[in-house]
Image: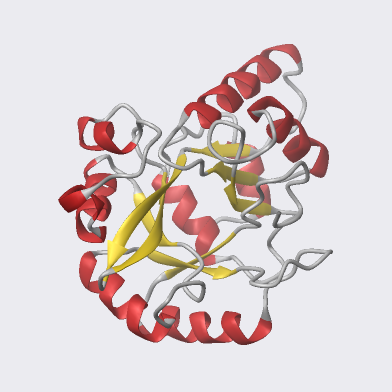
Length: 235
């Protein structure tokens, strides 16, 4: 398992597609890991968020985040801008401790005939399998089927998570087993279904998703799903 010290030590050499360290981090996540240590669900103005990517990553640095992912809808432009900012910061301030930024995306998909959101992490954004999913628009037809979205992210070397499993028209008890059959790697377990300030995972839904993650041996992730100007809040 990766410790915070190990991640901080390795952050300068990790690649944005480092799935091994990401799974170690996920294996240690708790309800209080987000939003002050990790945040794996964030949006910028490159999709439907309000923050510029550079402002988002500056906030992450100011907060002392250890790791994060920008998960804009059907786009990695926000990730690319933030990664460029980090690379420049490493040159200008080589002794400053910076968070690790993994590649991320949120893709609208269909599962059991309803719309769900699939989160992809630590994938190669230039892989041909993702070409049709990173054009800024939701996929349609067969491309939108969760099994195909999950397969494309896996082909690109990434890990796949079902976003906020208790926010859909079907309960998590039905959706998670179907997502497992489709090849999912994890579930967004720690999530604020109520927009609280400060951000905090909603207890009943969290317990339900924790139980499902244990039952199906899935990774647990966390994120504020911020679309506003403060990455600590779900807006």
